[in-house]
Length: 400
Image (cartoon, rainbow, N blue to C red; front, side, top):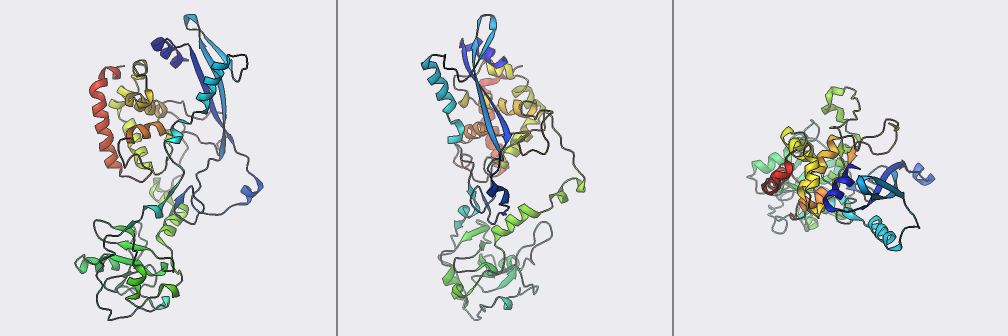
């Protein structure tokens, strides 16, 4: 009620649509209960990938709020056919409006779509083929360590070396990268031998300006140079995407969390999460950090009433109000579950989806308006610049 009255005082509006949304556990069909298939590709929201569909249904209730004299409020439950037709049409148009959902696509993301064609592929240097590599996977061996798994063939030199050692100690010998460095860094493209099929293979570019999985459109020719016929090979090792999926599904994250302690679930202001809007973890990390800073809390949380009373006629484009909404959502009990809620339920608790904020901040930036992964530090610098420019004209609004 506080917000209706605040806006009514500012605009003299008397009618408001109140929407209450709440979650109920979704009833699953017999087929869904039987389907326990696991992800087999590094994808979000696509067949074979990680499913992002909500495990609950949204129930929406609506009321017409009428501001009467002396700031009294009358609530009229909807639908109500006794209301004028024109008013009913306006109400229905607001209810049907899709809002940020049409502006931000959060449902699909697939790692394969991120692959670039290596700039080194078309003019790849290949040394004289003084050795031939067998099409028999059992004969492949790391030339440094003797390992038989996680083997990468340098497409320029024919050298077979182990993959990089991972941050947790697993992985290969690192011989493939060492060979790239020892040969002057001029032979960047390597293929993971166990992933070669007639449909392609994992190709990594060690070049500093790429250093990622890439596409080699001439891979069959480059492999044929060393005697490998892709039509004769079958997959014998996990692809990079499969390894990523397996890590996400099976890794014991307690190794980096509180030394295996049993952690207590906390539900209180300041411990509210942010929904991943499709590779938006970089934004979420930055927002959680900024919200924890007392000086920013004084501006965007403590001064919320003043911010609301001075907001523009287009609040969706008002950075100050949208940033304040983030503080209010994370630092109050507005999005906390009720004491009676079931802790084992699939309903989302302690979490919000900052879709409007993401759209507003990123709409003038090609990278941050996309659903691609981004660097948190770069986003922080970009956001601080927006905050600085906004505060030049809105300091008076940030006084509590």
